[in-house]
Length: 321
Image (cartoon, rainbow, N blue to C red):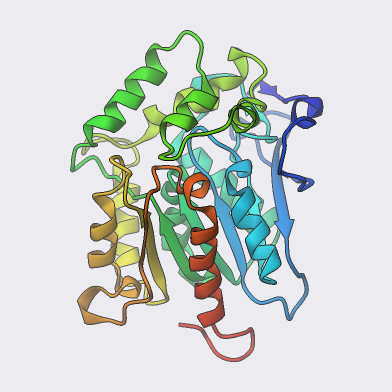
C-alpha cells in the first residue's frame, strides 16, 4: 500500500488548533513493510485519578480540527480527551488509492491505534458521522471498555433502509468532482456558515488530488444495500448494542437531513439510551446546528459530554454500568 504524508508546514497556518499530535503506528493490512502513521491529540489530566477518557472520532471529510472547541472545553473542565485523525485524513498517513480503504480496515485501524498503541481503556465515545459508524462497531465488539457513549449525528447503516436523498446528492458530488473542494463540502454541512480561514483548515491536510483518496472513498463504503460486505457486521453490532446498558446519549442537531432520522432509532433500540423503559440518560437536541454540529454548536456539545462524564463513577468507585 503506497502511503502519502501531508507536509507539516501545511498545518502551520491553521488557526485555533494548537494541539500537537502524538503519532502512533498501525499495520499495513496489505502486509507492506511500512506501518501507517496515525495522528492523535490529547488534552486534560492524565494518571490513575484522571477519570474516563473521552474518545473523539470525526467523520467525512474532516479531521480532529473539527473538535477544537470541544477539546478546549473538555480540557477546561478537567476532562481527559483524545481525538484521532482517521487514516487518510488530517495529519494521519493517506493511502494513495481509493481501493486501499474499506469499512473493516478503518475499524481495525482505530482499534489498533486506540486500544493497542495508546492502551486506552475506561472510555467515553463521542462519535459523529463516520466517527460513529466506526466507534459504534468498537463499542459493540468490546462494550466493557466504554463507560458511556455520546452519539452525535451518526448511525450504523445496514442497507436495509435507503439512505436519504441529501446523502445521495453528497455521494454523487464527491464521485463526480474533478477537484474535490473539501472546505466547501464542510461548509455545506454547517447551518451557520464557515469563515474562509476555517475552510482553509479543512483543506490543509490535502495538498493535491492524489491525497484525497480517503474523502473520495468514504461515501462508497457506507452500506446502502442489504448484501453490502459490511451489512452483516453492522447487523451484529446493532444486536450487541441493544444490550448495552451503560449511558448512551443521543446528541443530534435539529438541522441535519442526513442523520436526523437515526436519532429516534438509537434511542428506541439501545437499552442504555432508555429503550424498554430504562432511565433516559439525558438526550439533547442542539438547536440551529447542521450536520457538523461541532462547528455550529461546539460548546453545547461539549457541555453534553461533560455532563455525561460528571455522572459517571470515578475509577474504583464502582462498575459504572
